[in-house]
Image (cartoon, rainbow, N blue to C red; front, side, top):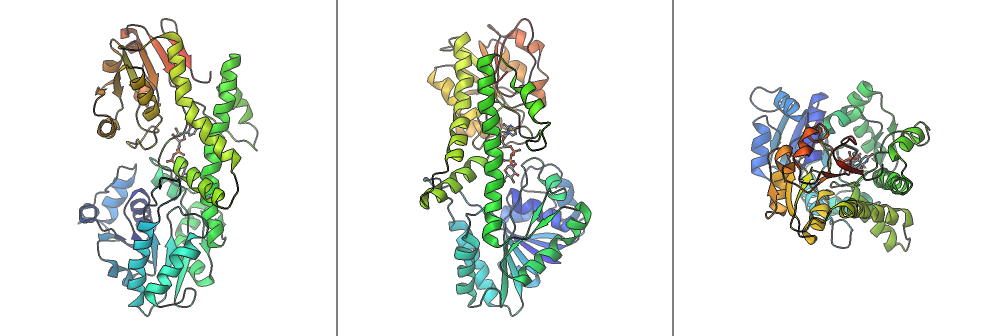
Length: 434
Ligand code: UGA
């Protein structure tokens, strides 16, 4: 089929390249000319495993020609469906800011006005239940002077891709959610996903659009709360001197719990869990429902970096001392520092007047933009040399492999927020929950 993707961020670029790989003709629309040029030269504009191969295979001079990028909305004329993959940034009150989505829908509606052909618009961005039906569809109708369900279709297809493994996740989904309020939109989405369904054998769920929107929030809320629950349990384990990982291994054998997302430690970060939990909580409160479990999930998550710092305080006063922060990305495999647990850790160290030296294999430059006044080293041995304490925030392989390097510390106090290294003689080791 012919598919347009509006937006070339993590989601838009990934699904554009993956749809092309499934055999569709894909046009990726973005207002940024540099991004468009980059894709058209056969290179992805973002860092994501497997994406350079796919973009190189389908875009650029030597590509199959199934993927191209443009700034021109009129390109959607030649396509059967458009996916809206635009950002929904967090507003100050925790709710999502829909202005970019509204602008995209306005532009798309104007384009739809000029075509007689049926076209299906699919919202891919994470939006509060009712947004597709009550915000996006009315804009499309007003701008196109057409009626949804009659002249064009509207669907909602949430994504469950993880940063760092997005291509793999797209091609191996646990489920495909095709939310639609009319049969023709649903049929179009079925046709687009048919090659993936055949290839992956993934179950297809077909709710209405507002249920599809809620599925995304429920998915992320559940995962965030699961990590916070194991962190809560882990904190109790620590008080008893019990290893939370041994406990997690055992409870993970229960199918109802499952072994995934049971790694306790310094907590969750990233652009999604915090933002999504905040947005659905704000929406619930607007309807006068207090989401107590989600509130607690955030509270526990906020607590973990402070527990890491207070374990350090139990062993060493870091005022004026060199302290190593190992890992800055919100998880291994990405340069993304959004909502990384390294941020409250750095701030806590600044309050303690520590001389902070940080290491991350790829995220240091991003953190330097936020904290230009702390030091960064290009290898973990250099940050540990002469440090009075080391705090492990991200379990990169380079960090889990450290051992003799800790011997170069002045006082080898190692506080591990990710169970990255083993306890051993010669270092004062504290695991956050073990
Ligand atoms: C998350 C979801 O997993 C995706 O399904 C979803 O599509 C995405 O958000 C999104 O909404 O866009 P992502 O933010 O890339 O994906 O990261 P995850 O791999 O889920 O990890 C989130 C955080 O939880 C990380 O900071 C990680 O270190 C932490 N975590 C995860 C733990 O602390 N313990 C665990 O056991 C698992």
